[in-house]
Amino acid sequence: MKKTLFLSVLFCWGAVCNAHSQEETGSRETGRFISFTEGGVLAGNSDNWNSAPFIFHSSLNYAFGRHLSAGLGAGVEFLRETHLPVTANVLYRFGNRAAIRPFVRFQTGYLIALEDKTTANATYYYPSTSSYYPYSYYQPYQTSEMDARGGWLFNPSAGVIFYTKQKAGIALSAGYRHQTLHYAGKDDYRMQVNQNRLSLTLGIIF
Image (cartoon, rainbow, N blue to C red):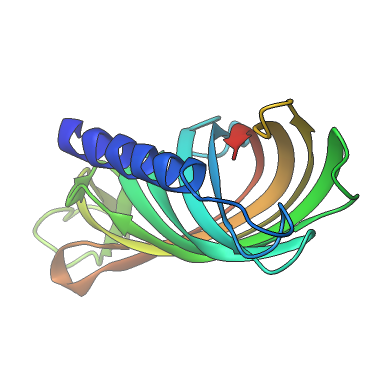
């Protein structure tokens, strides 16, 4: 886990330095790279494995104009097990060089499981002839260990950016996160977990 955090921080720092060192010619918005680094939580409910797991993302976007940019990103998410999200996103900022600019963003990608094992529970049913449960027709057998296989995510969101005189911005956003995680157990058992959460993030944009 420490190695994962170090790589994530290194990636984010490189993206920020690259974006900050770009020489802007002509328009200050078009044809430059934008770094967007953010942290937050995925708020859920008591039925979820984690009520509010922490997420950390950084993306590097190319600006096609004053409003539209698109790019790639990565990060780390602490769900029931640790995942590395690799994502693509499209960002649209409203307004023209204003100190406060609303924005919308669509993000999609794949969650790579960084931990092979997880404590997710799976239920197997044995018939009455099973030597495990000889006195009832069906009984569940619980296993506490499965293999995490990752899964897809998409996350539309909206928010607002507060720009400073140094052209850096503080971004607040909220969105809808849907993700499908896959797990594998013994005897070819497969489990799919669909999660729907509210994403709440605070970020820095250059």
